[in-house]
Length: 76
Image (cartoon, rainbow, N blue to C red; front, side):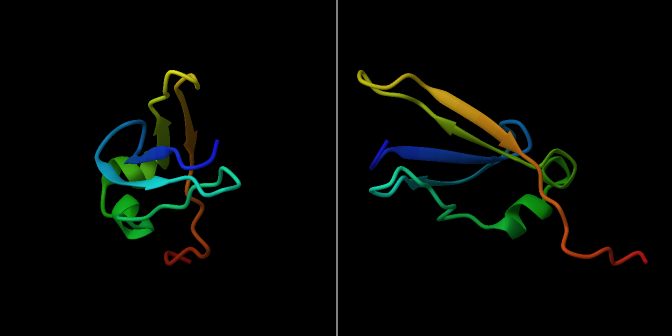
């Protein structure tokens, strides 16, 4: 789905981190927010992030959830 708005949240629809739009291939990247926004929220650190597409007359709404995996453990 090209040129569609996507909302990014910390956790499962916690704090809104930002919005972005899919590109010509239907791929969206977080803009107007950042991964640091996920980690600054306890909900984001524990619950990852979620994305939400509100849908249109042509396309049904959709949402998904992902987790954030740290590249290293600072406690070790």
